[in-house]
Length: 118
Length: 121
Image (cartoon, rainbow over all chains, first blue to last red; front, side, top):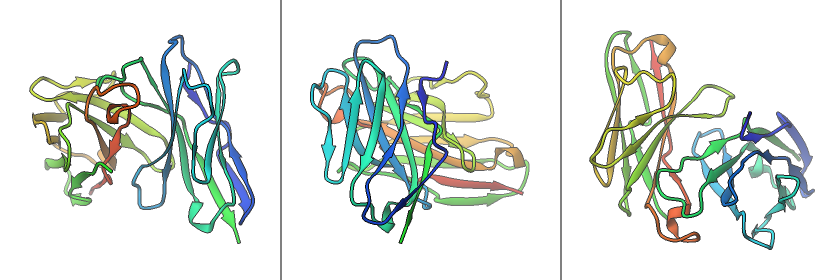
């Protein structure tokens, strides 16, 4: 079974509008971390936001927020006030294990290509 | 924030040659480095996990003898694609972690290099 599922291959959003990128995950661990990365056309992976499985509040980082619904195993990324520079691939990822020792790698979803329309 | 560099950023080589890609953590000691491969419009696929001073752990289906990984120091890991062929053409990305430093410490995050685009003719 896929550990991370992103069901939206592509999304369009009007500039200045908000957009939600979906992500569901599968794990039997009680302790895990969820990440969102942005990959522009240059290829670099840019860390956006992190949510720990024990965090009671949804994570927020500027215009990014993570809608964490633990019972549904979903970790959707919400981008508010979209900008043209937000056009990129977005990857949801998960890391299992509490202490996040270096040996615990990230499992990536297939990504969602976001296009912001002027 | 932490910086990871990769060199070269792109390389074109002839079939049958070997190519070495370097991954460096510039401002922290990376106990673990990861090597990923990404085909166009696809996700990142983990190739191997590299711990300093020990042999790399390869994912299933990744040829150890073809993709040689050396993690000789806490700031440098190298990936050598031996006898490269056109099907090895891909985008190779490394990442590094500072290791365990608490649940919310720097260790929880992986820092990615900018990637290396390999084209084998």
